[in-house]
Length: 119
Length: 112
Image (tube, rainbow over the protein chains, first blue to last red):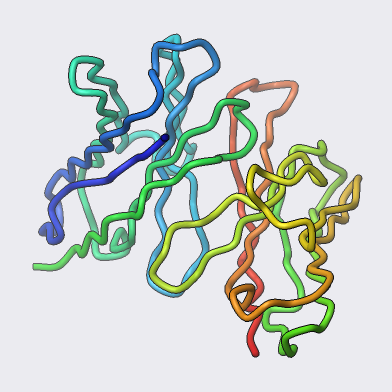
């Protein structure tokens, strides 16, 4: 059974760095075609893709946030970590991680974690 | 930049009705278009991928169609659990940059 679970601080201050962890099970990110991505959804708004890491360690970022994002994989923990620097109140959102085997759509999602940016 | 526009923003129907949701791109795109259902406070659930293929476990009352720049999600007979927000999502690359991009529509709220 494939599961993903996001974790991270519920509250961060402006200018701080956010670190989110996606802990997954039921698959290996070392297996060919496996990929894990991060998304976010501000309250009442649409989803936005942030970053993706692939089985071969290729990493991709949305252009508008590329300078602030870093995605990485810890195989010993089965975790994908997303770091976002210089947080701002507009970054307040629910952050999701999800899996794709095709690279085109996402078949399993975590339940999301709400991050509020406020002083 | 390709933008996905979903219509209508809100669709008010009753159980048993047929629902037709539209997703239109600003230019002709690949068929790597997906549809997701999102219940309040929950993660998105993949319904349709590659424009018309149903994801595992999705009831056959959900169907996807379309090509080019116009795509449709149809729910043939609405069940109470189908009232939710629906998003379309497109996988995008360009000849100049093979890096992936994913863009979402703004959603259609299907309400009773």
